[in-house]
Image 1 (tube, rainbow, N blue to C red):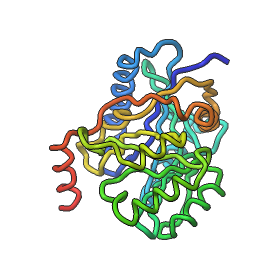
Image 2 (cartoon, rainbow, N blue to C red):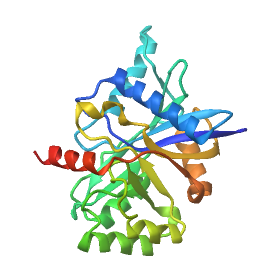
Image 3 (cartoon, rainbow, N blue to C red):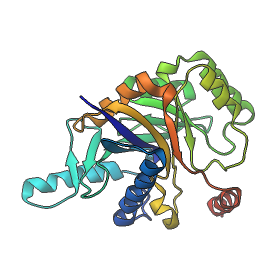
Image 4 (cartoon, helix red, strand yellow):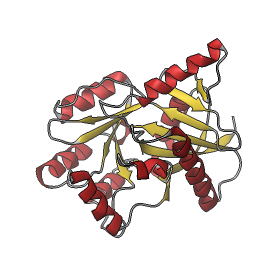
Length: 266
C-alpha cells in the first residue's frame, strides 16, 4: 500500500451554532492551504478527530445520516468498516474521514480527549480513573493544553502523569487557541524529550464566527491509509510516527486570544 500524506485536525468541535456547509467549506479551504504550505504531493487524505462534550452528539447524528442511502436518500456521509469513523464525500476536495471522539472533564477540572470512541464517558471522575476508562474503551487518550489548566497543582499533576506514563499510552494536545508569541509550555518540552507525540488541533470556540476554523491548525504525517478503517490507520501511523509529525496552520494572535477569553466569560 502506498504512503499517503494525512492532514489531521486533532481537536474538532461542531457546536449547535455552526452550519454544515460553511463548516465543511472551511475544512476544505484550510486543508487545501495546508497541503500547499507543506508542499504535499501524491495521495492526500484529511481527517477530523472529533472531541465532543457530553452535551454534543454531532457524530451520532452524522452516522444516522448514513442510513438515508438505504431509503434512496442522498447524503455526503458514508459508513466505514469501523463504528467510530465516517467519511464525508466532498467532490473536488481532499478525501475526508471523521473519527468520533470525546472531551471529558475530570474532577480536577482537567480535560482528557478520547479519540476513536463515541462514549459516553463520565465527567467528574479523577484523572487516573478517566484515563483508565479511556484506555479500557480502546480509544487513544490525550491531555490537551487549555488556558490556565496546566498551572499550579494541576500542572504538576499533568507533569507527573507525563513523567510516569510511557509515550505509547498517552498523547498531549496543542491547540489553535494557545496564543502565538507565548513560551512553549514546559510540559511540552519535557514530553518531547521523552518521545511523546503532541497532536495539534484547531479547538474552535462555541461562536458562529468560529464555524470555519476546523482544519486550520493540525498535524501531518506520512502513512499507509485504509479509507474504510481511518481510525485504525491513524492509530498505527501514530505508533510509528508520533515523534516525526509536522504541524501546520496558525494559532490565534494575542489580541484575538484576549477577546475570545472575554467572550467566553461574558
